[in-house]
Image 1 (cartoon, helix red, strand yellow):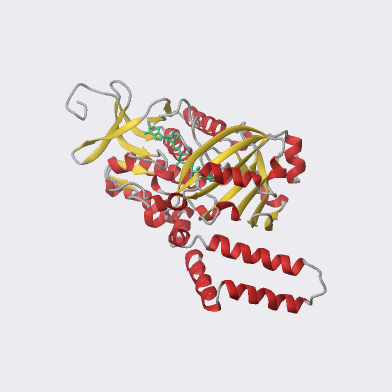
Image 2 (tube, rainbow, N blue to C red):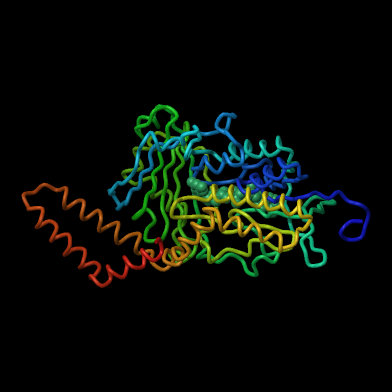
Length: 443
Ligand code: FAD
């Protein structure tokens, strides 16, 4: 009998919704252990419409597909340099780190590398298929199915599209409606817990990219840009080098966009016109334009992570570490841990919340919840204090300008002048308070 008392229907061990990094990691993990897994993806193929800045992390990918870098993975460039610009309208204080040792772990696994999601997601999902998962693209899951108070399957948009399984793993990304349908959260995600990212892929010959970013063939660089480029809103711009294109984009809180009424398009155009960015993209051809939400609410905005017959991983569970530009790696790790939990539940023959709670315990032990817990106060600060993104960036630029202008004024006098300027903008008491607030949010 099926869940509704009708004729016999096929039942899987697990249904995974969404073939992004989280869903594919979950499906590959379970399929490799011999479970019957169906991976449902609404796109024409995995990655068809997926958007991200583009930096992935090798360690977490290798935990899903060992030695992926030797298996034709569509890596654009391996990151050897990470820069941060604190930008004014026409200049920047630049920080960063470059080292050949940063590029690879001792076993040859790339530390961080750039990707284009349309290629990466497709390849990654293919690995899940090779492990035995049954990928069904062009299929949107519209609801979860319930029986006796537990989730027993999903309703897809297809004709006769109900599917049943012992467990449903929700990996349907930031705009997940299914998290609510599965009663893991009772309200939609709030605007101040979401950022909107807009991104353009600008085509340039590989040699031009290498010369402009000071790279050898195959090497990549990242630039994160804080300050004037977000026009007083919390967020940052970015430039990531691909093989023969550069991903340029900017992400800011949706609540701040609603308040300022600045359009994301304007923001991105402004970033591309910035005097430090323009020469890096000069002569390039826009290949792609996209926009996507980013869940930035952190630990306090996470839904319940499991219920009877259901788990949630990745963006759908608000697993993004915005400060470190990490999301894909949290998604892959959470997906893998969700998969391992289901394997254990299958061994025990118990898919109730009591067994699936193991997932939360595994996440607590991993960097995923450790990092989100560490930064649990940050989203609130980012929402309340967009001025931190401008005031201190401007002051850093003023200080650098003063110290680097050789005009016969002694360095001690310059220091005094800088301090006077700083305290005119932020009285000492405010400086101390700001420092304390930032420390509290990142300690
Ligand atoms: P997603 O990647 O969103 O995948 C969800 C999948 O589910 C999609 O394939 C979607 O089509 C499918 N789906 C959704 N609903 C349904 C449904 N109802 N039925 C069937 N299928 C469905 N992270 C980084 O690590 N590095 C970065 O540089 C970075 N930059 C970013 C820049 C931008 C502009 C944005 C928007 C995000 C960025 N992120 C970055 C975050 C990263 O993209 C996400 O954290 C990561 O993709 C989450 O993976 P996921 O599998 O949970 O969700």
